[in-house]
Image: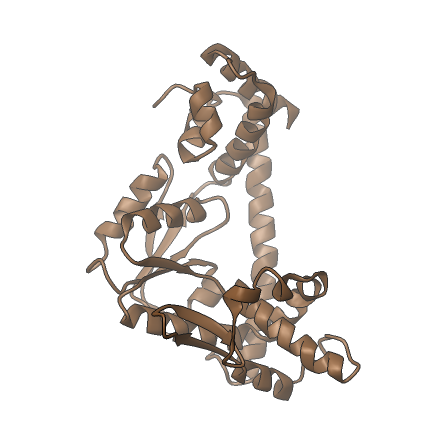
Length: 302
């Protein structure tokens, strides 16, 4: 294991967090922080899972999703002691080729999914990630457009099945003349052109959760169709998230990052908090010993 230095601390990456974990391995304060972070992760993930399940139930009622999706077996990867590069290497080794793969990556928060996705993007050609975020924002924007014209606001009661069906028809995913794939509104407006303006107004941002719960099925269906197009065009597509929605994306390449103990689960998140705090506490020419002391003080401060 590398020794924690100022240069590594400045990186604020998975190598840095591994060094912090090694430096605080026997630190009682850090162990308590890790356990607290682990419990918090599980609690938040359970709460989020409950909200997702509500949305899935609504989609099943509307006949958009099946109550029993056909899910391929999941390969579990115990990430304890592994760098993000090592985890990514395991996934790449399991791929049948380097083109057209749909890679499903799930696991609790704190297991390193985001960092692993970044490593996979570096390792694979023509690789993209798929996120439903802008699709939910697009639905919210269009719902607000229709309802505002009627003098109404976005509420659960006003989001009728007919309205949502009409909105769904106005959002498409196509390959454009320039060769790029784009999510489009009404066939004319690229979401990429309005994602940081019209789709991110305070009003739209505030209403996204309400619309998202009512449109889980529509958005999952949209994403599955878009991913199929990308894969057929040779793109490697990575989806990272929760099993409740990922189960509806057909792919045999399914991986779950696992940290079996709550204390260990919280270590990564605790290390990330500690290293960010420690970076604020060190001078520009701090020695290795001073960096070590800063990390210990940061753990106590948190």
